[in-house]
Image (tube, rainbow, N blue to C red; front, side):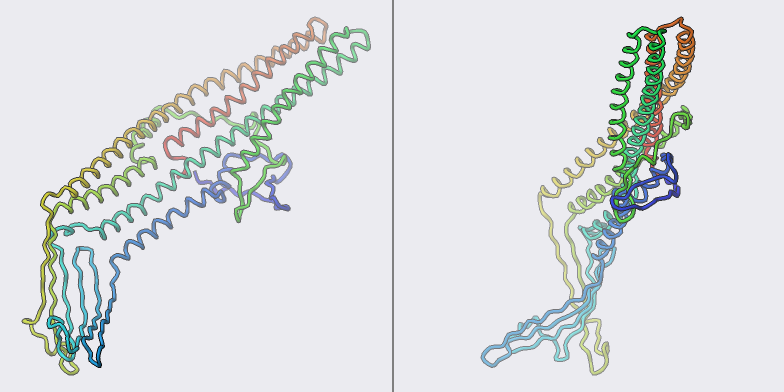
Length: 469
């Protein structure tokens, strides 16, 4: 849900304060998400995941970098050069388990080991090392790179999952803020109505039209509604602070919501349409491939399969073959003295008889894969049921909002009729207050249902993993 909505910030002294363009500016859900995506620390942290993935691949590719090497080992004693061993060269690993190498040896000395003897001009060599058994199809170096590439690909899904949860938490808090403000407005209006009625009843008492008990009852209503209003104001202030946790600006500067910014009122909100059954079925069918959490499970299984393949290689014997062509430089010619008959080769073979370690490691890896597959199936079922739950909740709340809206309209009509009767002396203050209390309760319930409906709407997108796209 990427929405590039430009919003005006007026920067004041620290701490910075988020204000509207004019008094009573409405903060919309889209504007909140714009701030969250652009400046929230968790959102910025998510953007670093791609860099981490690229760095891990770069590090793993370092296993295939050519390596220059050199070594000097000399011994002098009793005015004699016992031996002087000098060699250097270049090794080039390749993806297919073949290592190319070339180098130069220059050895001399009175007590030089015969196997280290080389011509006076030194000896050049070049050749290959080949793995024919264990490590032929995959080795630790190739496995590390494959797993790094899988991790790099998984960072996008990890970022989506991170942002999906962040957006849902922010929007849930936004609608708690909307609900608390609108409920506070209902109580504020009820206090003003009670004060107006109290003044009217008091004047009627002075004129002799009302008994003194009516003034006391009217004043008690004022006090009761003031208590409810003050409690609603406290809830609104606390939800405002909680919502401010999601509002940040440049340089990791937190923003604060002031009274200059307000939520939309119930008359300014349009109820979005509920998701259809066909849309739900499409989302459920795509859930195993599209949800970031399911994708992360797939990437994890891919990485574990690399480990499994590496463990399978451990069941094979180690067979390493190396061959080096030898050449004595002649004069200025580097290859003038080369003869095919001059070479050095060797082969290393080893194989554990019982393979207990290798078979145990492979079995452990297979069990870990099965465990992850079971967790994936369980998580998929939970996501599917969660999605269905939000779908059912949205449909139910849609009906509830319609019924509640109708009830508010009916309570308004009852209250209007009761006021007319009260003004003509045919009703009592108690009945008018009773009608008003019922209307207030209905208005509070309507605000609550609208907020819950919008949370269910966002919950559907969150359950599908599509809140951040």
